[in-house]
Image (cartoon, rainbow, N blue to C red):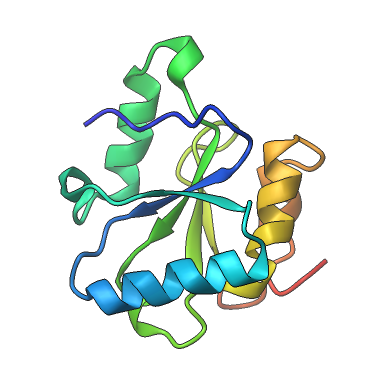
Length: 136
């Protein structure tokens, strides 16, 4: 299960929960409404219930040019919570470190990570007690 590599600067939203197709569509619509260039969606059942460690291991095993530095996961929490918080996962500096990103903040986090204006820790260090990013 190689992690997909995006050719553009859009962040990848990887679906790992396949329990509710309508929730997935609602998430996509919410992300696109916030910024229609913020995400590339990966909807492949080979990633169903993939753990963070599995994704870290898959990325580590990739060729250097195919490595990705972070990914946003659409997991069970994303699909059931009304705010649709994605799980942002670092695959580069501190592999496996994660925090929640409500859809409204996804475009800013995505843009900063994709152009390396800020690194993963800059956002992760600004989370609240529930490990959710709510702004700088």
